Image (cartoon, rainbow, N blue to C red):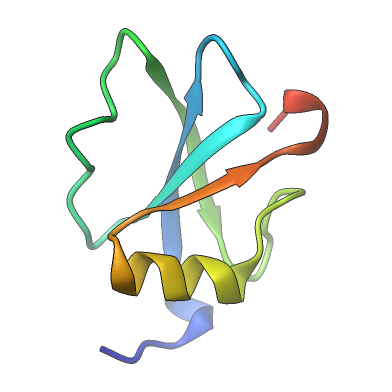
Length: 79
């Protein structure tokens, strides 16, 4: 499915023990079962046109089309 980057929004989850590890899931996709509240916490919603550090929009699009989620590392572990 093709979609415009201007409309891509992702929910981002942060690994509690390793806060630099992030998992982005497009808002129109289900959250993967490995994202559990004990291990992961919701870190906010991001738009492709204003991505956080470490987030690569092209990689995110390819990964979510293939796997349904995109793992990335945020420098310094901050959102």
